[in-house]
Image (cartoon, rainbow, N blue to C red; front, side, top):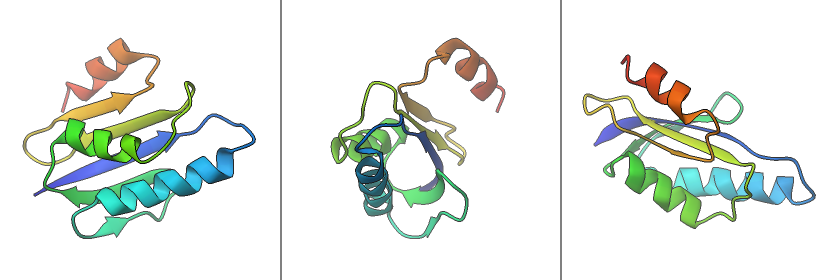
Length: 99
């Protein structure tokens, strides 16, 4: 089991509240154990999946829009990560690879 940081930003729209509720529920349901979510749009979760598997499980349960962004970072020793909708991928990869 690994510890993951999950963060997101949703594009504004008439269905924002519905997407927000669906995404938070999907994150909580995808976790294998404890979930910490005291700050906005940021979760710490345990999961037996890898970064891509956790991201795929979350996004499969939510209708994400083109402007929505989801970030899953493995904080454990394997240091994996997965993204959906990240605009500046090269900069993100440059920074995340410094771990």
